[in-house]
Image 1 (tube, rainbow, N blue to C red):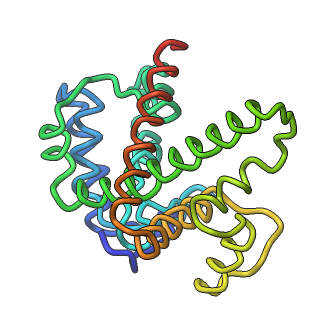
Image 2: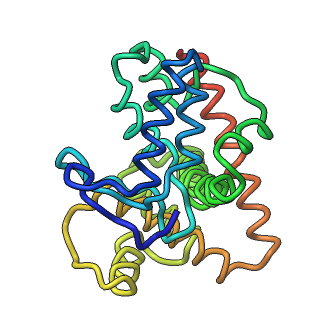
Length: 233
């Protein structure tokens, strides 16, 4: 998957991507479970981003972090009539696959290269988001213990505690470094890239013990969030 590859699929499709789509359709037609066929197609996919049906899909962030569920969403459109609606929603919106696969099986299915990039996304974006969530919880608990009910700047305080600056200041630095325009809003794709940039910034500026402690805190938060989501399911 090359970070330089981008195309308009409504007009042209790379040969590798066309083969991935054809493999997906053929595998399902031959009786392979749609989820397994989907993972096999992901392994064959080459493009890092794509314009399709008037939407821009970005699968690889910073050339390193593979957002596999975005590609899964794109490929699901190719066999939408063959996927049970609940299974599709569970996968794409709640990251609940219809089949439980071992880590090794998942890695083999999407290939070692994409799996490494998936781990970059997991730790660089999902874990980083969980870290901020955990620090926000810490800030709120501290304020409640002091009888402070104001919470409108909890998020900003969490960013300062974690990265040493406000969210807006960090976003300004990120956009300046990337030569992106300053806007009042931020797209989901840009926010993911910003989060990955924050992850790298934290690794560069914090000592190893602090990084390890923060990572552990984030993983505990992720586990807590997942457990809560399962109870609600």
